[in-house]
Length: 321
Image (cartoon, rainbow, N blue to C red; front, side, top):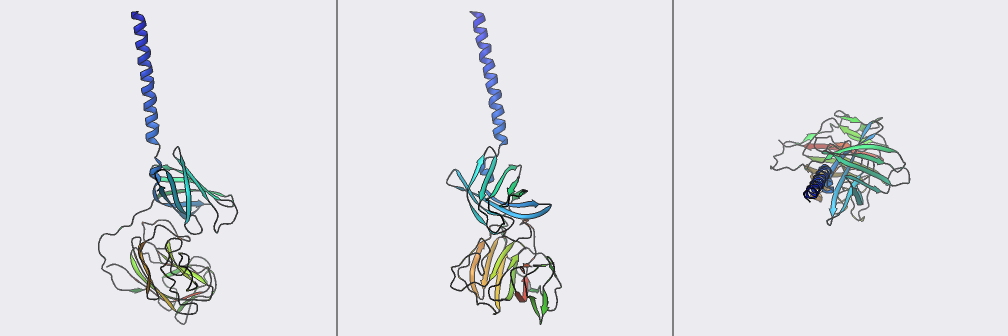
């Protein structure tokens, strides 16, 4: 009887030890697995396209208490909604239809959290696969009131001093006007900026399309949009893919027009031809065509020159003192 009790006690202790070891191992594995809520937020992504870093962006949100949804900016195109992001055992994946990409299949994105970084792959609509990495996007909140300095000319009215073309240059100065008479290279300022007030005076031809990129990452659209068009972020004075204007305040082609743009952190105000069409709204992330996804860093002013003729006669910028 005594031996039986001893054997039973040993078995009980053995089972208990085994159970505790299994529980500890499971707890350790669970602790090392990121929770899906760790994915929530905005991510600045960099995609390795055959050795060339290309900017991308992802936002992950929780719909209700269990479904992950989001928004995605691929290496081309604008922000697109993601109806559901699947999450299982530390891995996430989703797919979206192609937009401006060549190919017919859905874009497929998959990855996982590794420490403080996202790492994964994107399969494009043409079947080509690229790796990406990403970090949490900065909030860019500003706390103090800003005292502004004096306005400075970024375009001197004479030549391209202070600017460089992104490819074979078609830009020239004609009678004091910065002119791109045909589609070609974009134009990027040598200087980089954080917060600023930007004033631009521009003119476009019928059917033309351009844009001004703030910090080289957020495009304010210049486009020959009909005045009676329903306001859309892809039309005149919208922040491409993110913020629609309250109205289309365009004056039409072959007419000089103005934008006055104030960017403080992520908050932007856009006055188009004297009308405030976006008032202190947050820009969530980078727009298609961005130079990079390093949102916490200062960036240049860049002008789109690859979508038709466009002219600028004045570009000035005002920075905080």
